[in-house]
Length: 297
Image 1 (spheres, rainbow, N blue to C red):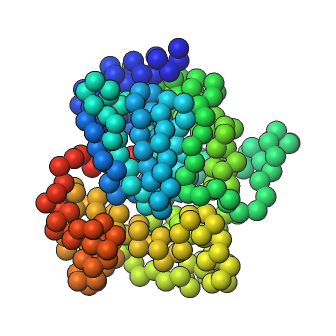
Image 2 (cartoon, rainbow, N blue to C red):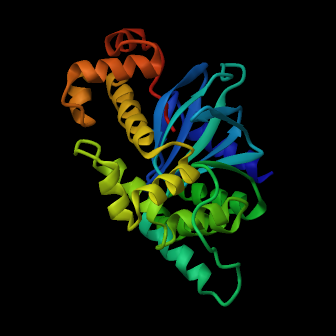
């Protein structure tokens, strides 16, 4: 019943395909009434919850298909392919995209770990690979509904928005993906910090030695642990982040050369070679072939 109410709220507040702002920072609704093939995207830390239809994400060849029985949890920036291949006017997709605030999630993760044994303390590094699907549970559903119900009042959003969003974060951290998310946002996770640094510094030169040093590890240990978390070697991850970001920028109307420079390429020819090797098209062919909305998360 709560999911039906969530779906109705989204239907009432979305009048076109794509993302719709809710007025609550980091919380957006989305609708798709046409099939969108899986295209390059970058998921910043987020949760994506579907209440009607199905959505897909692909990370390093691993395909995740989810609907209203599971939500997607991505606690670190990840280069993916994503889309809504099954959406149509007869089978529309409705969902919610929730950005995960690093500071708030870290505070909650620490509070939970220090709460006198309420949850087992997470030991060691990340073991799951980049993203995870988690079963909807009652706490997540109720918290999401309570958050979206604020949209009827600007005053309610201003006064209660942060508290309701914090409640939803708490439900995520307690849910099936909770240990995975708590590991990513825990203060001791050097790999997650390294990924966050890469994501926000794509224009700057990035070396594996620098990443390892920043994480406080030897190059060999860093390489092994990084691949455990992301399924990719560090240099492959950096390249995927740059190329996926560039593909999104080109699809959004940026010129090929501008997109290449924005993501840290100094050689247009190298950018074109690596882009074609990854996507099977040159950047200009990719730009000309775009017929679909940019992947929305």
